[in-house]
Image (tube, rainbow, N blue to C red):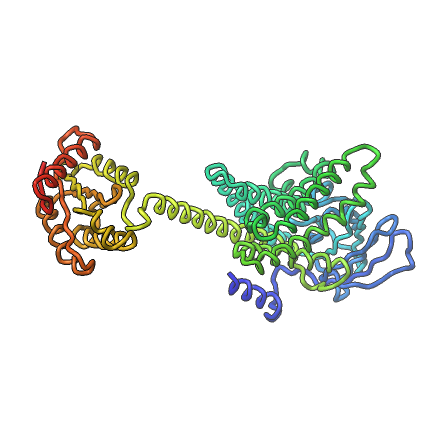
Length: 531
């Protein structure tokens, strides 16, 4: 992923400029506050430009760079206008107004504001565009005059690109929500909330909720829910990082700071809906929202330094998004005006982040499952010998009884002879070594799919599927003889062998094996008896 990012960065910043057949007519521009006709300034319409928020808005004049307008049907495309109100005043045509969320009198377009211009001004006179940012952020924009076919190609390409990005985000959110409910892991739920709200923000800022989705009612009520969704996006990102990176174990104090920040945001947003407090809360919440990015960044870096690899995954996915956000903020002040792709980059890095974090969640879920499986294995293993304990052995044998080849199942019940003497002579540590030695004898004498367990003390049990059980038992008995010299004393074992009978339960099967073992003990020990 880092290599892909590096390649994309190289393509964006270092690649030579290639002629774009859909770039449109070369334009030059001037602009002035609408109420101050004398304060005219020049600018390049092909570069991003924020015009501020003077009273009455801004009048933009667009001229053909070569001095004469061409013939034909053209479309004026205002790119990256965000929520500013744009109006086109072309000679011989009525004044037309449009916004990103309402085509109004403009041309319905995808990801931009567009106006059909069937007649261009005569004699190189300018196209007049009015920009009003009185109730929104004066985002930097640029202007392109294309023919209708080129405009359609640009919009179709953007629509495919934006749809792919948004579908990627929403698909990963739905999958995460499903797994969160199944695994009962809040990290998946916060991830789903974060990605969904970010996708909604991008769909709104790009106008996607209106064209092509057609959610006009939702666009009309944006002031009522927009800030709440933005707040929820930041809150869910913070709480996702908390759960995903394990801040409770690694950074408990910083975690409390994050939770306090989330509580403050919730209070401010809630008070923002109280009549009489709306203006004050809007003024307060914007700085608090801005504070969220450095707070999350610092927390994630601190978690990485504390050894959280999931915080590193979070940073891998989130840093490109932070970079694009910072770039967009810098462009408000005239920095990087040629990087006109920043709005589309916000969609792309959103999809990239969704994929990275979903892969991180998948790896985290797999790690939790591995730990659970290891714990389950350890819970079923005798810590001294490494064999199955009584409970795990019985469960494994019951599973064997349910298999189609259960008719060939036999059970060996084994008991080390005179084990008290072993402990008396070698001590309890020596007795433990003998038990480990015998477990090793069993492993060498049996197959990998045979079920071996320590039933308690010096008693062992074996579930044998197929094969000659008595011959296997004799092999175990002789194997222990051969290893006796390692204990520096003779070691013997008595073994009871019995074959499973159809319909017989595990308790009855063990009872008969135990009776055969009892017969072996009373028959002189160090022998195999079939029951």
